[in-house]
Amino acid sequence: MLLYVHVPFCRRKCGYCAFHSEVPKGDAVQVYVDGLLREIALWGDRLGNAPVRTIFFGGGTPSMLPARAISVIMDRIRKAFALDGAAEVSLEANPESVASMDYMQTLLDSGVNRLSMGFQSLDPATLKLLGRPHSVRDAIRTFELARTMGFANINLDFIWGLPNQRLKLWLDDLRAIVKLGPDHLSCYGLTVEECTPLEQDVLQGRIHLPDDGEQGKMFVYGADYLESQGYLQYEVSNFARMGFQCRHNLGYWEGEDYLGLGPAAVSTLFGRRWTNPTELAEYTRSVDERTIGHEGETLTLMERVQELVMLRLRTTRGLRVKAYRELTGRDFLKDNKSLIHALHRNQLVRIRNGYLSLTRNGLLVSNAILERFFSEMDALGIGQAPDAVAADRPPEGTGA
Image (cartoon, rainbow, N blue to C red; front, side, top):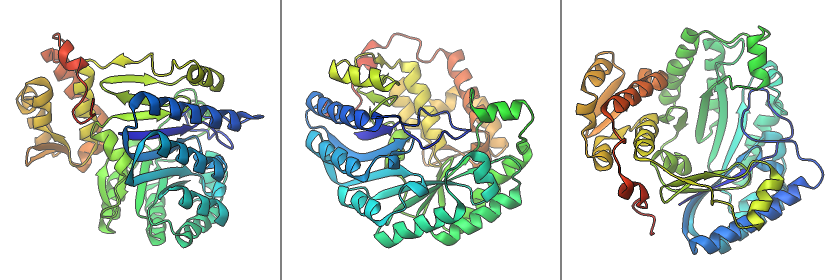
């Protein structure tokens, strides 16, 4: 099982972000930590010391928590679950919030062995535009400190397709990043999310984004450059040196069960999915009343099939066509024969060793390709027939 811990606090809200986070007021951090510790204990009782092989502290900004709080949370997790001795434990951080030796040492002592820092850009003007609270110099110094302190697995987050950014600027950023020598890079195309300040700036013409052609070049040429430097693309937005793929995220893409802890965290266990209450007061009340997780819904066969296709085709390995047959009793290649032929002619997909995967150009337009596959599924009526037994059966390997 994968364990995700959502920390809903940020020093300030970035203009492009649509994730649940807030600037903490009063005793909000302590209320959150106390509630989280109770939720961990509750799930430990419910699941009976279930095995956990990865932990991911996400947010928000997990590094806004005191280092001692993270240590206490890790201790409670070890008491409630059977934590794998070789577990990958990731923590997302803003550079300025972990820039002390004491903080990093406490993280290491608590068991955090993978640091994921949100650089987003190495251009000072862009950082200011995005509302990031750190400078380029702060970010680089924090990375170097993390290395000195002993973090041997560091990811850096960057965004491409930013306002006023062009291909050359993106490639210059990548060259500077590679010189630092991170183990993993997450490179996300900027998405204009609804109800964010960025959306308003774009709609009212205050900000102009690169056109689709320029963004396509950033994605393709950027990935080509990273692979030439030893960073293998293993998912739409993720690149890693050999052996440094994020095991937690790979688990998501492979459809493993995961338990989400904290406000707004999502869980999928035994074929059921639920989302924790978003507001802190409602979240802690649901923990205390032991109702958290009771509102989940059983995933339908159609939902499970669509997720299988969507998540696997995000990865460069692709969809194992046998997995589709095992879930549906049908042949994916035959169900989508005409579409696959058209995609293959345009060099957007490849079929190899029982896997269908998207090429780099295919990954660039993956959303449109997935919509076509989903339309084919709807036309064939896949998942619409009663399948109560399959839907209610816990996934293999859960131990249930």
